Length: 175
Image 1 (cartoon, rainbow, N blue to C red):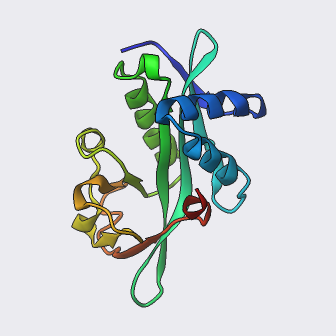
Image 2: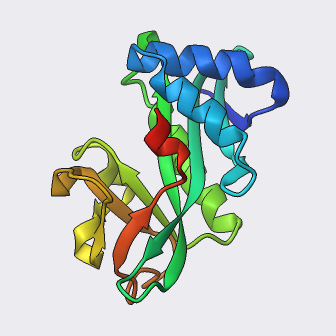
């Protein structure tokens, strides 16, 4: 695993974060999503927009923002959305993404959050404890294969009595 330093983003990191996200995904959509979410004070958590640095250069980024899981009667439970997570293409598959995910999970726990939702690779996220969200009765607001829409409990039984539809910040639907 590469040695990296992980810290919250700073205002001077915006361009580098855009560059990493655009390069990692081969398109600007995820970089645009990060920029839009950063402007949403309701859902953006500065401590959960994390950058990975090697030799003082940003080579990775992960963002977690708040969402709501809403049941059929309108009850809401706050959760987090992990999206996006990006590593510079020439450094992928070297453990930097895993370090970002692990750091983000730990920071989320420290901040008192109880769960994380991710739409991601079905073979990548389970190694961090993510399970199909359907296991908890949690559904995506759009059609998606069951094995790529996952949830992680950050505290024991955090999702035991939670079921319903995830309501993402509107910025997710704009890009």
